[in-house]
Structure formats: structure tokens, C-alpha cells
Image (cartoon, rainbow, N blue to C red; front, side, top):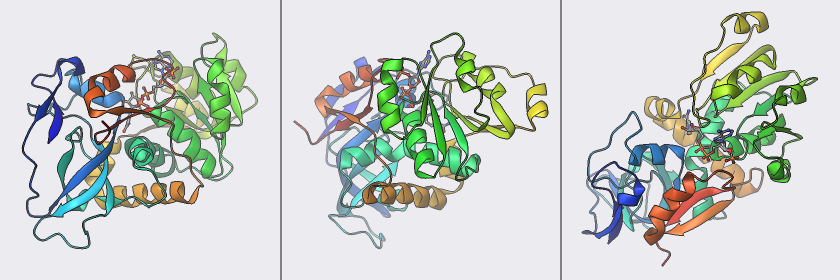
Length: 323
Ligand SMILES: NC(=O)c1ccc[n+]([C@@H]2O[C@H](COP(=O)([O-])OP(=O)(O)OC[C@H]3O[C@@H](n4cnc5c(N)ncnc54)[C@H](OP(=O)(O)O)[C@@H]3O)[C@@H](O)[C@H]2O)c1
């Protein structure tokens, strides 16, 4: 079988498609025929050696995995061949077949396409954990989502809207406005404008979802209403900002850290249940999956190159069974 592997963490361009033996499931594992693998911001950091966690080499990237169970190892109960499942790992997905611990798997409901499910695994789990788990989002809250066109930002717009919140979407280019409005935002803020914070006046915010950091964090925090919560999700805009600590005091507001890996590792069952809920909402049509940009396994390096393109407009997904 084929896999996309890196011998060094010097960027995806150094990755090669290599032939390797079909993996056999050990006790407690299943072998999955991989149908779709989502890639995100963190995957690019990992393959270029810029992430705090360093994998063993050679490394097969891609951890947002969806596929069909093809063989079941000893001691696995309640999972049969032919079941479609999803898992989130730190890598190992960019291949035709992989083995996964049965305890990590979440069933994928039939109406949901594999590419759509793979595009949801990390981004929707993160947005759900941030908004509902850490942010205590309530129906009727007003949520400002920075980076609303990105993977986790887009998921936050859709999840907040599905939970009954009013969503204001921050974009870096107003040409992206129609898309976030279609995702459920009720207003769009052009964050490329120097006075973008003025566009939030008259909307005291209950929550800020912040995957950008940099110069965006402080003005967004200043726009919170009393008892507001600012969710620190990431630093896609580059810099790690500092915040004057009188601001939380003045607002009785909270700065809330979001680390979905901590959630998945400290409460694996809770993580699985939340992801299953998100899949169920998508299968029933109450939550939209992301738009996907699909690549074959042979195009894995190109898929990584797409990750770093601004204004990409979709979630990058590699479909290893595509020729
Ligand atoms: N805390 C967690 O557990 C967790 C989990 C997953 C991801 N993350 C983090 O979340 C962040 C986003 O990840 P992602 O996978 O959603 O990335 P992504 O899909 O590439 O989205 C990035 C978003 O940031 C915007 N952006 C990038 N650079 C910008 C700049 N200089 N100014 C303004 N906007 C900018 C992009 O806007 P355009 O569309 O205009 O390019 C896009 O909306 C990353 O820092 C990642 O590490 C955190």
C-alpha cells in the first residue's frame, strides 16, 4: 500500500509516496481503509518542525482521519468490518490503510460524506469545545468570530449559529462576506480596515472566538460586554499578543484558553461524545460541514501548499483512494 512519508521535518515538499506493507491490527486496534484526511494549520507546523510536539521519523502526517473498518484485532468489541469511522490522531493518516486504536473511533453517520466528516474532525471539535465547553455559550449570546473564513473560525460561525447565538463574522476581505453570511453570520466586520473595531460598536459581545492573536486580540477583548469571555484559540496572524490585565477587571470579563488536545487526552470519552454529536447534527442537516478542497494522495505536497494560501476558501482534504 502507498503512504506519504517524510524522512525529515523540513516541510511537505520533502515528502515522498512510498510503498509499504499492509498494516495488521494489533490487539485492541482496527485496520481502516482511509477515505479522507483533513489537514489544517497545525499539520503544516508539524511537517516543517515548527510545532512543540515532534513526531518520530519517518513521519506520515494527517491526523483527521475517516475511513472504513476493514479488519478487527483481538479483543475489539462492538466494531465490525464495513463500519465507517473517524479518529483524531497527531498523524498517520496520509496512506491507503492505517491501524487505529478502537477506543479512539467515532462512527460516521451514513448521510455524511467521508470528505465532509474528515473536514469536521478537528475544526468542529475545537470550535465546539471552545464555544460550548470553555465559553459556556448560551442561546441568544452575541459571538464575534475572528478568522471566520478559516477552518476553526468557519466551524465556530456554524456551531454558534446552530446553538442559537447571534454571530458577527470577522473577515480579512469583504469579498468573503457572502460566504460567512450563508454560514449563519448576521453581520460581517472587515478586519482589514484600520477602524474595524468601530464596526462592533452597539454590539456588546458575550464571546470572542480568537484563532488570530496578534493585533486583533486587544481590540476584540475591548469590545466584550460585562462578563464576556475571550476564547484564545490560536495565533494564525503571527504574533502572540499581550493584554493589559486591567481590561478583564473593568469588564468583569475572562480570558479563556482553549486546547483541544488537552480535552481529547484528558477526557477521551467526552471528546468522542462531542464529535459524535457534531456528526449527528451534520447528518440531520442542522449543522453545515465545511466546503472542502480535495486532493489525491499523489497530490499530498500540493495539499500542504494550499494550506498556506491566504483566502483559500475551504478545508483541505486528501482522499487516498482517489487516483
Ligand atoms: N486551540 C486549539 O486547540 C486549536 C485547534 C486547531 C487549530 N488551532 C489554531 O487555530 C488557528 C487557525 O487554524 P486553522 O486550521 O483554522 O487555519 P486556517 O484554516 O488556515 O485559517 C486561518 C484563518 O486566519 C486568517 N488569517 C491568517 N493570517 C491572517 C492575518 N495575517 N490577518 C488576518 N487574518 C489572517 C485566514 O484568513 P483568510 O481566509 O483571509 O486567509 C483564515 O480565516 C491556528 O493558529 C491553529 O494553530 C488551535
